[in-house]
Length: 379
Image (tube, rainbow, N blue to C red; front, side):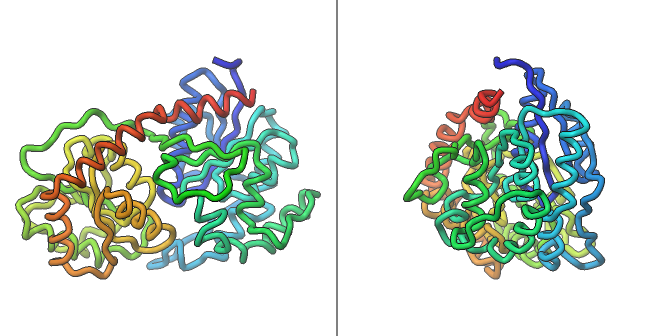
């Protein structure tokens, strides 16, 4: 192992984006490194249990969601939070209070990456969405409307302005010492040009699933977003469709009030359950296709039925279908259509075969070992 290092990890709470940061922080702390995490108070317990020191943001404040409001309703507020001067100043203050050797940041915390650039410390961007669509694919311009806020923060820090003719995210990530794409390379869309600082390191989990334990009766895990995306309607249609099949169902609510759902005969409904606990004995995952859920299923060799709700989820679902790992349905699909797709994935052994092959590919990345090796090399 390299010498013991001092890592500062900057995070925000937006659902599945936390998983690779928490997993990497846990691995680094377990290897004797000093790991400090800067983030919103809601994440304190998760990182402290991983062996890290946790410091809440002092200046930056995430938008407060009022009743019936979801994250997507206030994108401007969230952009000001992740790209604005207050979070950048918090990162600088943390480094000034206690020196660090490396800054690791969620790849969409542009303010943290710019603050690391200001300190001349090596910055590591953790990418928790498919990389290619952000830098040369269909999402390449999706973050460009945030440019005025990014520019204002860089001006505040005394940093040079970014090339306005170049895609914003690609330009920001190119300035990091390392960009760690936390997925198998084969699951991403193919790149036409590969940056030198890009490394595919595979998924990094909080809790690694155990070996497969095939169930005696087909078991379906229904797992939608851990942030509210108004998924109660599609959840009910999924449960209604699965009630017509000879399967056992575990459904996680992700914050959806249970009072709004009709209980079905074959479903256990829980607010939350660790994926590592249920995936080894799961036959199919029905999901919104958030990347952390998809990667967890892939690592356990479980095929999927995807009903993407928005954000980057349609791209993940497209890759699932293209690689033969499952089916991709519109989120408006009826209960009957959902049931037929689940039965198809259970009955057609090719889906399980491809999922098992992808599990072997995923395991080859070492469950975070490659990421640890890359960041330790910066010491």
